[in-house]
Each structure stands twice: as structure tokens, then as C-alpha cells.
Image (cartoon, rainbow, N blue to C red):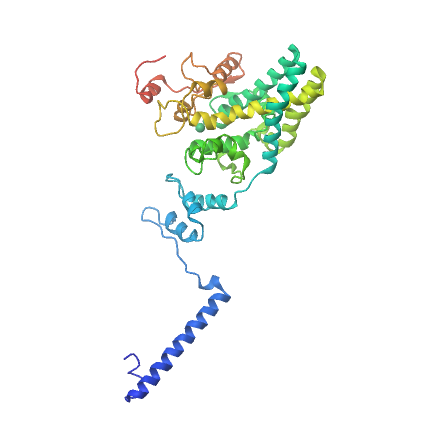
Length: 384
Ligand SMILES: [Zn+2]
Ligand SMILES: [Zn+2]
């Protein structure tokens, strides 16, 4: 008996003592429950992170994350552990879960994308049917569209995100001005996301992860709240005062280059209706979707000659729609190369523009991966 050491030797007394003992045990349990109800933090089970032998201070992410995430639904919990990335630390997992739980629609982006889409697909054809376009109107529209598009592919992507070459300040100013006109955020914000995309391709940390579907990779990621912009991977870009100024005053840059200038010049050339429909709405629609195709088409259709594990692919349609960015499997394998189409005959207008600017001294230090390295990665021995 439990209480034999403190109870008298008679049997009835033994029972009395046992009953008293059980009652006090119940009372103690009730008191403990009440205390927990009043102050849950004091009674919560504490699990301390344990380091491993090689890294004594390092948190073991999955063990602790599982404890913290026990109150999430199974779908959200699975979404948090989708990544196979070894760098997917506790902080990453928690960040992802915050995003999953807090994800909500970005209504300004939804309205903006909807308006320019309907305007381009419905109102522009009606205008063309009734009025047509003069040569000057076509020329201004084409100039503004190509200037914006090349500013993204040559400037935002290859120059700022990958530092695949260096450019003089007039080139940087040009791509920052017309890149802002594309309404794809500042060069620093764009590069921060794109570097994340390259580092965490096809994982939950990829901002436009193709595993979440074609629509999500194309435009869906723009329409819902993502994680807050983290500039820790673009500190090098902050050394450029032009880039920094465009980032800090992005609203002014984008509205001047994307709305005010095309509206005023367009109205002077072809009237207000032309200015609204073509240099503004249709141009933004085309340039945005051209960039979006790199995240959707270039991660869905085509071949993977250089890296069969990545979803990035080479496809002629992506190449044509994106100024040569569609050699995406090559680009993911060798992101530092200023070319995406590495052979001389590959359709890559961005590469040709960078090279042409280098001839006149406006760009320099063009990075090229050695042909032997490319051939080894390609598994072939022939060279261009
Ligand atoms: Zn990609
Ligand atoms: Zn890239």
C-alpha cells in the first residue's frame, strides 16, 4: 500500500487514509488545471533547441518547427514542409507558414492587371478597327514597348540581378527609367526576388514557384500578398546611387516614365485616346506578360539539356516572347553568363544588344562561360 508507512495498522483506517489521499490528489489536479487556464504561458511545455555536434548552437528546424506548427491545418502544415532545400531553416519554415496563414489578395494589383488586360484585349482592337494607327503612332508605341522590355531583360535581369556585365551610367539610367515604366517594382526589389528564385528554384521559397501551378508562376504570385521584401541579397546594388534613388523614389520614377511621359508624348502624336490605349495600357500589358512568360512558359515547356533536375527549360516560344530569355535551362545552369542563347545563331536580342553596347564602350566585362564548360554540362563535344 502506498500509505502504509504513514497510516495506523487497522484496515478501516487504511481505507480512510486512501480516500483522503485520492481526494487531495484530485484537488491538486484541479488547482493545477485552474492555474494553467489562468496563465497558459507559464505551464506550456518548453522544448529547447538542441544543437548537433558539428554546430552546437544550430537549431534543429524540423523538430522544433513541428511543435510550433501543431495547431496549423494539415494542408498548411504540408505546404510549410514542401521544400527539399537543406537551407530551409527554422526561420524559413516559420516565414513560409506566416505567408501561408496570412496570404491575402492584393486588390490594387488585381484591379491594375484586370484593367490593362481588358483594355488591351477589348478596347485596343476596337480602336484599331475604327481608327487604325499612323506610322508615327506605331513607331512611338514600338520604341516605348521595346525600351521597357529590354530594360527588364538587359537591365533588371542580366545587369542588376546577375551582374553578368558592367554598364556605364547612361545605360544604367536608361534601363532604370524605362524599367520603372514596366511597373515591375524597382530594380532592387526585382533583383531581390529574382535572386531568391535562382537560389530556391522549385521550392516553397521560390517567389514564383512553378510547382504551385502555371497560373501562379505566371501572374498569380503578383495577385496575392507575398513575403515582405528582403534586401539582404542585393546589398551590392545599394552601392549604385542611381539604383538606390530609383528604389527609394520608385513611385515617382514609375509614374513619370510609365504614365506621364507616354501620355503626353502619345497625346501629342496621336491624341489622348491613342496615348491611353497603346503607349500606356497595351505596352504595360505586353511587357508584363513577356516577363511573366519567363516564370511560366520557360519553366513548363521545352528541353533541359544542362540541368535535368531544374524545371527551367529551353523553348523557342519562350525565346521569341522574351527577347531571348527563353534559353532558361542554360540560364539557370550558368546565370552569370551575359548570354542566354550561348551559340552565335541563338535568337537572343538582349545578348546582341549588350555586345553592341560593348563595341561603343557603354558596357564592359561581359561574362562568358567557357565553351568547354558548356559542352561538358551539355554532354556534347561539339562547339559553336
Ligand atoms: Zn527561372
Ligand atoms: Zn535569372
